[in-house]
Length: 300
Image (tube, rainbow, N blue to C red; front, top):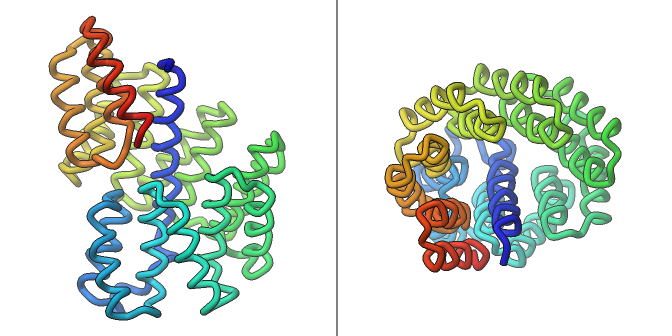
């Protein structure tokens, strides 16, 4: 077991959660949904899928054909690593509505995450065929193009996404993730700042910006977005992780560990807090405890 492998697992978990916060296309308009579905949808968007799933299961038991609940459940299951269940839910939606673009895009993303790249490409192209002006469909295609090392084409799809839906903050954030993969730092920060401007109450945007600054060792710049995210949602586990990483950068190991443990309590389904705790324990020269935390990270 290597630290590199553990951090790769952790990075994939974070990327997955960013991927799953795709915005409102999967949900009905707020005035047309029940209070429990509003709560569950908010929990999914705020990356608490473990808390959302029981609510969604209850709604679907009551209303088996509730499309917004089914689509939200697919996202929650994906975030929790329940890929087969997520695919089954998306299959249910697509049998009800074969041209449901939200389900088609989500299936493309799920196929991408599970390594079914040919099907992911087919689903992304189908979504674009259904609605060429759906930005998430273009981003889904950009991901598979990037994976195929077609960076120019991937950037073109990102540009199309922002051209057709320039007011969607999540599209700016998702294209930022792709730009980061292409090592285009100025485009990454620019896109994230646009995302924040469009949706100042969405903690995911601040978390991604802070994480980018931390990766670049621009720790002073990471402080403000981290604090802002926690002001909006004190239970934002990813903001807590960023705070722990900032403490770690300053070699304040006990403070880093305490905050990482708080993050773990809020996003217990993710292996990322355990991965970070493993690094902290290694710095503390507690190797056995570090190995145990790395093992937990891999198992999640």
